[in-house]
Image (cartoon, rainbow, N blue to C red; front, top):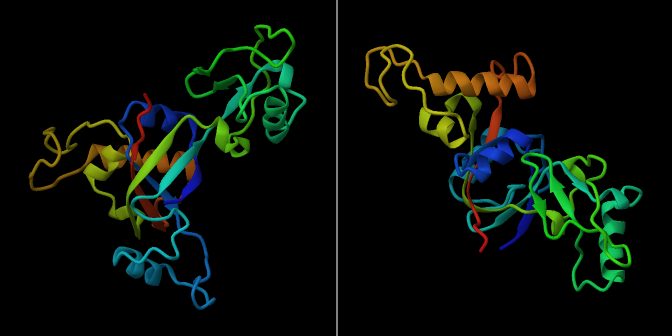
Length: 224
């Protein structure tokens, strides 16, 4: 089992914490086959991944874990230090593992006692905003168990998939019944909402391009 990092925005973090988001879609990037070193076409990648051959998956395979990166703040007294320097400072201060008072931007939650590394320790204010891409493993609060990995076209998403992406259930726009409705002209509000979200994140035309995407299914690891 391997742990890999994955970055999420604040709205997606809140959906994961609410257990309403159990899927994520990421555009398939150009890649080389890890076995033979030649370019791997997305359709070829989809074939092998969907057969359960995960050697070319950057997200791993079912049973692996993802640790989540998100925007955060350390204590203001640590603003001049990089995350790696903060971890070293914690060890120098006598902690057995890297640690720092951390505030998570998505919901304002704080990890641990909100004190700095001063002597004696003092209550401190949150510092500068740090992008999630710079979050170290030891500062992450969310770990995900991968339950499924596949590759497909973006527009293959189903209403059930859209709900698993964290989209609220709104029913069929044609008949107003809950999805799946079974009417003659089903029009999923959930897929409409996901399409609009995808465009907001990835830009105009990104839905219409219908790219190949990784679909990663997961469950949040609950901590005692």
